[in-house]
Length: 123
Image (cartoon, rainbow, N blue to C red; front, side, top):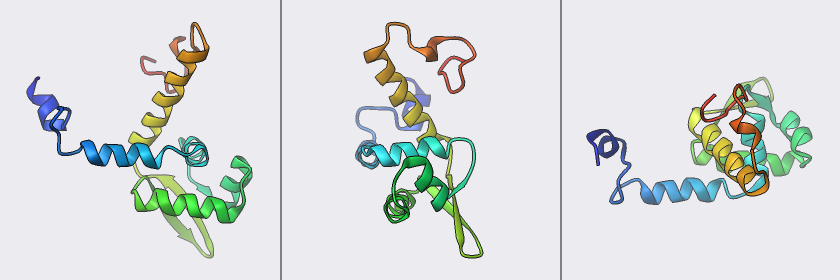
């Protein structure tokens, strides 16, 4: 194991393993994954997220509250509207990698292996 792996917590005895499991647990919901996909490139209002995910505003607000508590999203308030964005690129990458892994189970040659595909691991 190299020093970089140890410094980043990428060891079997890492103090971050339990927290990482909590992150996976937080992402183990289709609506939350869809919200993260929607927020990949820009911030969005609760109403826009509700339309995009085909969920009620109340349901989207509840999911956003959980994602906010997990420090995955953060709000920006403008008057009475709240706009949400991803805190950093890590949730975006986790969801992209999960989608790419899912594609491997269905496709012989997944689209993300094609050069130039946005979010592709090697693009």
